[in-house]
Length: 158
Image (cartoon, rainbow, N blue to C red; front, side, top):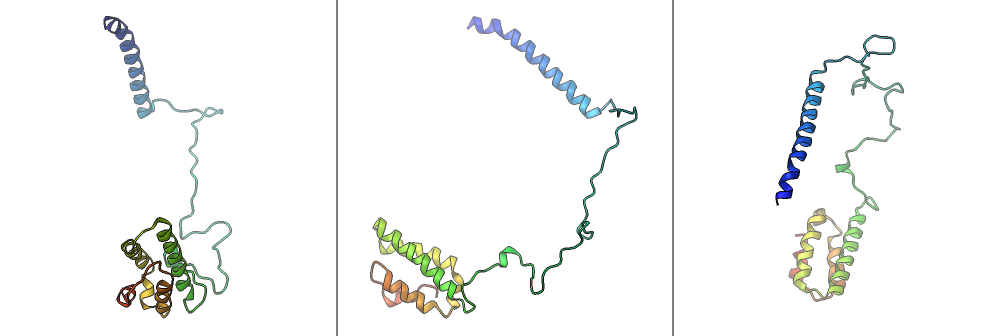
């Protein structure tokens, strides 16, 4: 223990010198008492980069979209296989197929199925007013690894 105290004064001295140098350097940077001179002897000019604002355009000009093309925010972007919305039904069926595979692989029960279905219903909530809802319910009835009553089937999405 005495050996530790004999070495401390050396470390304290080095630490205090380092702290003083940092303090002096920060003061110099804050005050900027010097000016940088260029090769010709005058002060260095600060170059400003011009960024065009949204009202101004670049050298190329404003981008012109092709006829019939519009800009849409990503939040409004939807994909569908066909115009009648059958892509939604196929997406839900694919999700249900993966759900049924997980249930049979892990030997989960009907209660676990209902818990998982809450997430599927929230993900595809637009299916509640979709004409393909009956097809999805029929898919659930025919592919579920356990029997479901009519009340349980009609409870999905509505």
